[in-house]
Length: 500
Image 1 (spheres, rainbow, N blue to C red):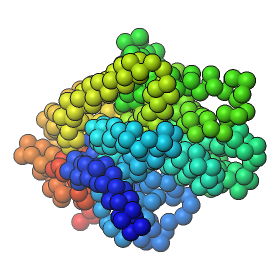
Image 2 (cartoon, rainbow, N blue to C red):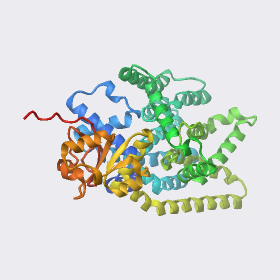
Image 3 (cartoon, rainbow, N blue to C red):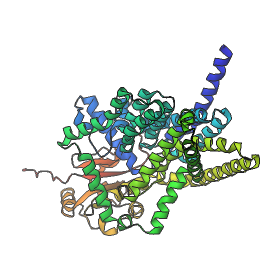
């Protein structure tokens, strides 16, 4: 008995180490490359400060993103004041959990441990999933709670499934559709509803509407804010408002790249096989047996369909690689089930398809390994600032930037006319502030070089300390920042002249 427990523990520990070590190491070694990551960190730092000072309130939670991820990290940061590492490690832990859920869901679907292990390795060693499991964004933590909800739904533990769905719905709004999906699945398999589970599912949207109302007086302010943001993007970037065929192909290729073409094809084949069984005359007898794959199909195609619908309606103008990671994780168990389901065909057909799947999956992994240097390049401080400047200028076409770093200017892709530099700026501190204000400068890139007027007049900003006039914008906190370049927001308020 003790030997069996030791074997189970060793096996479980091995799974955790295989998927956890690369994610934790990447979290420590690779900086965040994404501009959104530093916006999340900014929220975490502000909420940590508010929690520590005792000024935190429900209104504090309102913002551009739903609050669960930032709030959990902010609470941890009250005790461990490292917002960047805390947010990255939280993502790494969630990424590890996703791999374990993929293993257990696959095992539940196919009842074959070797296939479940192969499914586990497919995501555990996926370079793109490892990378984004180490970044301070919600994609991986959100996917973890969605996979958890699916796992407990398959086990028919509806309260746990609803609880995971509620947390997911407090991170990203697309999980609100689980409010309808989970009760539908329970009705299908059990012909009843759990009122407690339904109540838990409703918590995420109800709490967010209340937070929006308490903070702004309008429960739907979040949706209006997001609409204004998307409208601004579409107005300023015509290639997003009216995408060309080449642009659509580019976005779809990024989705296929992260979601894995083979997994997608396997999921469509699995859905076809599931429907064939359901529409058979004996569907009532097979419905109980088919429920796990039906639940997996429902989750997979709901999230895939939501993303495609948002993209086609221009509510999500672009598709980034990280958007496909949840589709990839949800699809792996379905792919495994599909391969097992067709094993009853002629043996050579089964072997041929299995070999093709392995070949294509490894080819996709090889491609992602080759792209790792590009992601590392994106993590350079100049690129991070450039990404933020591009987002700022995209949302507000009148914004101007003071910047002496030519690399940041070039990487941002913003027209040179939007930038000011030291060549024409005054060397007097008060006149320089007036110069920034008169030219409508809202953001300043601080580089500690001899030729920079900012470095000469404001040496106190060289360590990211900020001041009354210059608020540190990126990074959100000086802790754990890996560069000597800073993006400040200019407050535009001139100091009063001395009467002496």
